[in-house]
Image (tube, rainbow, N blue to C red; front, side, top):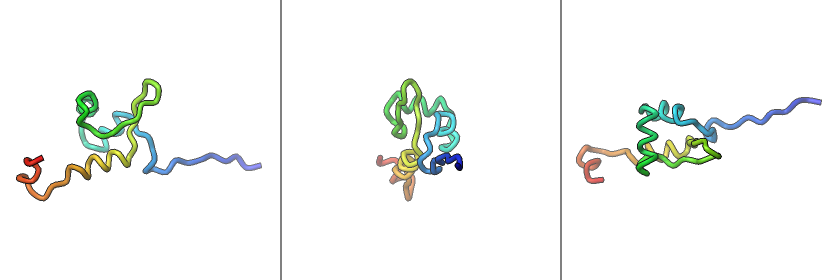
Amino acid sequence: MKNETSVVAPRQAALTTPEAAAYLKVKPATLEQWRWNGRGPRFAKIGRSVRYRMSDLDAFLDARVFGSTTEAQAV
């Protein structure tokens, strides 16, 4: 009988704070501060652990795409 293991698709991976920070190109402490202030990407709590879904990180980035600095300042 073949041993089957399930593989999580990369887009559904749950990233740790350092992994998510690396993806966003910020320091983990910045991501922690954003989380504390409610300004960062959505996250999941699993027990005492914090995890980020790639889809939430991408949505966070997508919400911060602007065509000009004037447009960015209006937000």
